[in-house]
Length: 283
Image 1 (cartoon, rainbow, N blue to C red):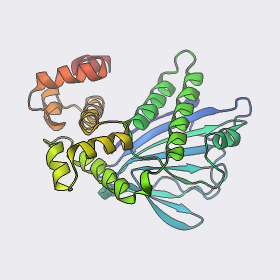
Image 2 (cartoon, helix red, strand yellow):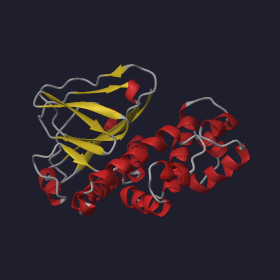
Image 3 (cartoon, rainbow, N blue to C red):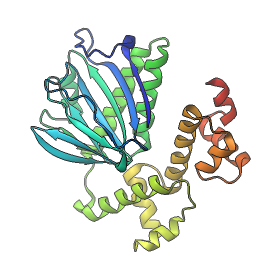
C-alpha cells in the first residue's frame, strides 16, 4: 500500500475554524496494492470539518444513512460536519483515493456558490489527472509549510471546486450514457495497462469507434488526449516509485513501460522539470 498525508501543525485532531471563510486542515492519499482491506475509522458522529474524497482508480464502498453505495473512479464524495462517516477500500479493487479536510466560517455558502447543493454526497466529476495534481500539490504544501502556504492551500481547494463546478455545469452530449461508459472503460484500461504498449488505433477499432471520434471525446471527457493521459500516468507512477521504493532507475523505467532508461530519463525531465536521478538526490 502507498500512503501519503499531511496535517496542519501535524495534528490529526479535527477542528472548526471560525476566522477564515475557507481553511484546509489535512489532506492525503491511499493506493491499495496488496493488503486485502483498508477500513478507515468508523466515525458515527462524523467530524467537525468537511471532507472531499476523490476516487482516482478502482472503487470504494461508502455508506449513507446506513445504505451502501459503490463509488467508482469517476466520482468524488463529500461529507459535511457531524455526518456519519463509514467507508471501505479493498485491495482487489486496486483503489486509489485522494482526500482533503477543510473548514471555515463560510464553507456552506462557498459550496453552494460552486453549484454543490446541501443534499449532494456523490458527485460525478469524470476522471482527470488535474485532480491528482491539485491533491498532490496540497499534500506537498501542507508538508513543507513554506511562506503563505495556508493561502496557497485555499487557492488549490478553490481551483478543485471550480473544476467540480465546470463538470456539474457541463451539458451532457445527447445525454449519452454510452459515451460516458466508453470513456470510463478507456480510463480504466489505460490505468491497468499504461506500462504496456498501447495502440490507440487498435483500442478504438476493438470498440467499434473511429480513432478521431475516440480521441476527440476522450479529450473532452478528461481534458487530455489518450497519448497525453498514458504519458502522465507513466510519469506519475514513475515519480511514486522514485519516492517510495529502492528500485533503480533502469528498473523503474521498465516498470512504467520504457525499455530504454536514457529515453525514460529524458521524457521524465521534460515532463517533471528534473531527471529521475535529480529527484532522488532531492529526496
